Structure formats: structure tokens, C-alpha cells
Amino acid sequence: MNTPAVEAHGLVKTYGALTAVAGLDLVAERGTVVALLGPNGAGKTTTVELCEGYRRPDAGTVRVLGLDPVRDGRLLRPRVGVMPQGGGAYPGVRAAEMLRLVAACAAEPLPVGWLLSTLGLDAVARLPYKRLSGGQQQRLALACAIVGRPELVFLDEPTAGLDPQARRLVWELVGALRSDGVTVLLTTHLLAEADALADRVVIIHRGRVVAAGSPAELTGAGGDGHQLRFRARAGLDLRLLAAALPARCRVEQVRPGDYVVDGGVDPQVIATVTAWCAQQGVLAEALQVGGRSLEDVFLELTGRELRP
Image (cartoon, rainbow, N blue to C red; front, side, top):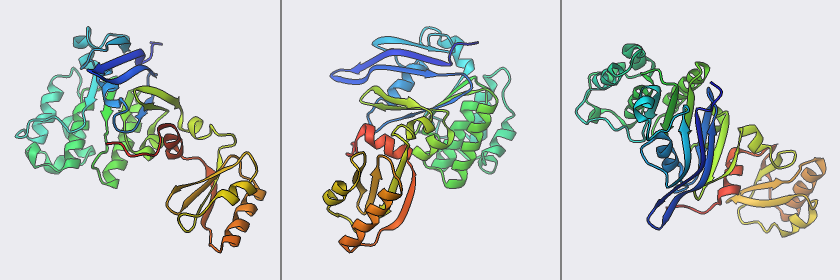
């Protein structure tokens, strides 16, 4: 089929005076990994719930595998896997029992034993869900989402609480799903995760899409995409440096002691920065030229202030 796995236009969802989703458009092509990014309260979870059919939009349309996720929920459920944040299993159910129960609802499930082993859960297969660690509960939720061989998987913070080894394992599994033609729509706060996994990144802010594209497209959006980064004493007065740099450049302290010069870096810019540091009597450490990171783009679009 040529229709996207997920296609939403003009989605609106309000809760009283709060507008969680404000005219949002979203497309996930089949066989791709799409990552939704956004600060707390941006509307990511509500957007996913609208696509899953758990909530009905106040305005706009959404189609999942060509169907209405609310009206056609019975037809979609066998074709879609959902991994909610926080697991959602009964506290007393054993890990293997939970996975077998979900597998029994599928026409052609993956082998339960293989999936438990692949996700490192075979040693805790007989333990009740409430005795599993947070990371083990996350992996069990992922196993339940994919055991039915879905065409589309929704993953909400799939590696939250996982150690680096388990996180890498989940990343490999998501890559294997994509290779098998499965569409994956995930939300994450880990920008490195989105950079590593996603074919397409969608950044949401205040219920709207503020940027979308591949990680390379987003990070290369500012001219040649190169920056000069260096570390020095925190709180330096950057006004003289800004005046000495070419007009195309801007300089800022992104975190205490971390400085970035953006807008096109060449040998003259590097020389200007090092000469200015020498005049200030400070040592520029970790001097590095490279492209903008996904974190840089994210913060530029959504701001740097903390959200509750």
C-alpha cells in the first residue's frame, strides 16, 4: 500500500482551558522509524493517544494503516503494537505468563521463549511483574508490544530506566523491526536515541509541529551546519568577542563554561576566538569544530527554560 502508516491533519485536543494539541500534522511512512520530541507538556503523549484511538480528537483527522483508530479499533488492534510508559501489567502476573497471554491473542505470534531470551528476560520469566526491576518491566512491555508481529508499533519512552547495555539491545531490536518493514512511532526524551534510530524526527512545542525532517536535515539547517565549541571559565563577557567575529556569526554560553560559535566556522573564526581567549587570560579547552547537534536544534526551537 502507498498510504502512510500514520497520517494526521489538523489534530486538536483540549482539556478544559488547556489545549494539548493545537492543529498538529503528522505523517509516518511505512517501514520507517519516526521519533516525536518535545519538552514536558508539549503534546507528545496526547498525540500518540489520538493515533492509538484511546482519545478522540476535537478537530482534525487521523488515519492509522488507512483506518480510523476510534471507529475501526477492532480491525486495527491485531495489526498494531502499543508499549505504554509504565508497563500496564497486573502486579501479580508472572513475566512469561503475561507475554504468553498477549501472544495467544495474535494469529502468528513470535516465539515467546525466543523473545524472552532476546530481551534478557528468561532468567526472570517466572517472577511476578511487581518484583521485576523498572528496566525489566520496560523490556517486558516492549516484548508484549511486538510479540504479535504488528505492522505498526507505538513506543512511549522505550528505554526509560534502562542501563546502557539494555538500551543498546532495544535500539538493535527497533532497527530489526524497521528492517522487517514495521513502522515504529516512538516518543523519547533522549535526543541521542532519536538521532541513532529515527529516519524522521518531529519536534513538537505547545501542541504544534515546529520542525520535522531527518536528523541530518535538522542539524544541517543552519548554513554549513558547522560550529566551534570550547570550554572556558564560566560567565565570560562575550560582547567583545561577538564584535570581533564576522557578522554572520553568533556566540553564546549554552551551559556554564560551555561556549558555542555558530554561523559558519573557518580558520579566521578559530584564530579570532583563540586570540580573544588569550586576551582574556583564559585557556580555551576542548576546542572542537563540528555540526550542530540535535540537542542544539531542539533547544533553539523549544527554549532552554525548565518545564514542570
